[in-house]
Length: 481
Image 1: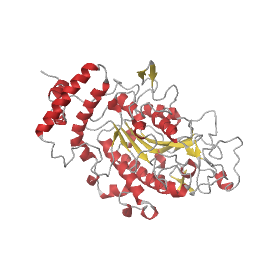
Image 2: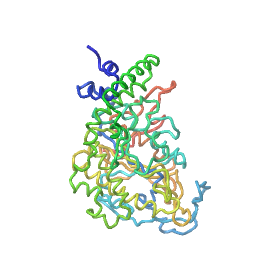
Image 3: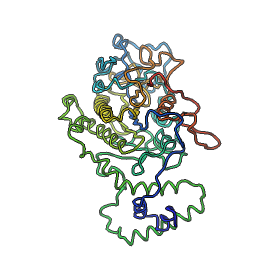
Image 4: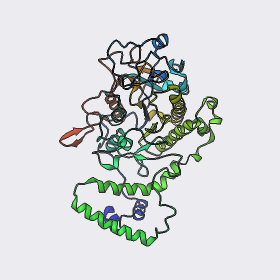
């Protein structure tokens, strides 16, 4: 008898041989390093919604009547403030009016009012604080738990710890903004020092090639059976030589696993990403047919509603089929006028379409998961890299504010309709400056909901036991059921 790896290598390691092996029913792609959960999990899947560029808590979720009262007056923070740019103008009231929603009466900005339909499922945290007002560092911090490169994303840690629910699809999937990457690009979801197999797999719903290079180029007439056989033989020879010279190097193993997964995805991914299989009322709910939704007349940028809704619906289909962690990005790092949340010039112009599209798609996602019985074991995290200032930049914008911002969670194990932590009267810093909420607490809470003790999920690197929460983090028990 010959084992599966040797069979792949001796048959050349080509995708054809790998696909054959997968279809013959080889061993599963894997469980994680944790043989069993540290405690009973309340969730088994995660969706992270990341608003790249820094969404304004003051205009969306964190209502400050003092800003309405003092609008236009000279700002006075009671201390020296070092602005990122020149955003220390007069106090600026919220761009949109706020109103109460749900049985909890949560105040939301009008632009995100579609979330009012599901606000009773959400737990808001208004005293989030960061370490930096620089986009790249702050994005790293929220995505990986460290404000510098070289550390695994949260999805990579989840994949490493818990493994896969479906051997035919990736464990960790990333749906980037349709216009391009946010700050740091793929480094936000890299596996870093964890085995490479745990890095995020990029999928672009709605494009002609959602998964790059999954299928051969249609015009490649030179890809004959003999050419594949010859290339496979050469690849197998190189693989064997590489493995013999680099014992313990996980990259080759990860590459082989990626080919195996690609072969299985050739069968599973097209069906998972085929939104035409969804009924019209579902697509309309997600904003994919804006003319058929009650929000149609209020959408001033249909592209945004379609793009974000498409990612949300694709995420639900991926979760249904066993993907464990889906990360959805809104906003990219290029272009002007801005197509991200970094609204230095004009909050209404830049946040308006982004926030409306996000709210429509997110509300649909929560409702859809709930009606399918999936919300009870799927945890949703909404985040951004930092907040924005309560004073004006120019006459219409807001500068960076790393001192306080908002996150919210919903779903498996999260107590809905509650608020934890407050910002001060201006929305400038946490009301209780000694006890803010940090990203380590968010990450610890997500892992806790998945049945993981964040202090016990570690990886030895350079004589240090590394973990997602570094040496920090506490579970936010107040928002849990």
